[in-house]
Image 1 (cartoon, rainbow, N blue to C red):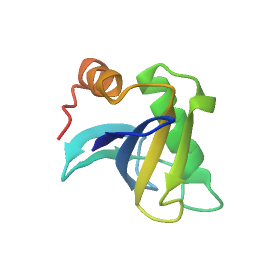
Image 2: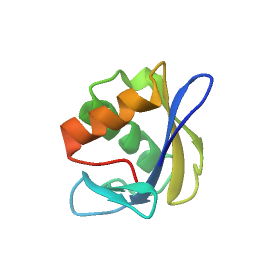
Image 3: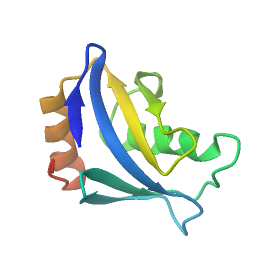
Image 4: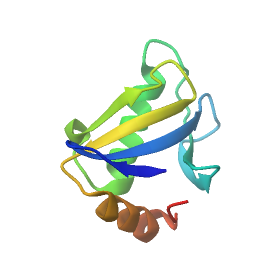
Amino acid sequence: MIVGSAQGAVLTVRVTPRASRSEVLGARDGALRVRLTAPPVEGAANDALVSLLSECLGVARRTISVISGERGRTKRVLIAGVEPSWLAARLAERLGVADG
């Protein structure tokens, strides 16, 4: 679910767009499951994902970017400037999600 890269940590996310509310559901099948109210139109769901992760993790929006899966439900998201261990600890602390 979380791997390191030269730029930071990469998180695998499984997105469900057009949900009744935006929330992080937890980890399942090697990905963080996220529901978003935004539709998957013109990048709206990607923008909503970046905003939600920024708020949940307590990092600036500019440090988060979707690096693959822009048009799919399974995405790889880069959180720049952080270690994978920090990201795993933050997910566990803030969201009750364990890496798995």
